[in-house]
Length: 131
Image (cartoon, rainbow, N blue to C red; front, side):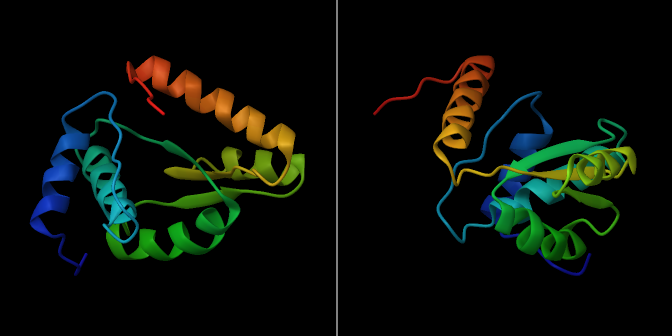
């Protein structure tokens, strides 16, 4: 791999690895992508998981994860599900280790779906959201 995680990032990788469901909430620049990819690579290496679905904004799917996966998890393969329905289907059917699904929050309907999805995620994870 060549890159080294900081001690708090290693702690976060262990945190993710040891749980069936978890969430990393950290400020911009804290290394959430490196943490997540490192945990994914370890889980795949140890046979705990085969594939992941990452749902993220377009820029993250197309510009961030493809670069970061090479640095932190070169053993993983990745497809970006973007474009027409056929192109998205092809990304999933390629059976990569990771599929980055573009979440388009540019319109009101997409934002409503995203908010509903996050509500379901919070409920499934037993999280409470306070405003």
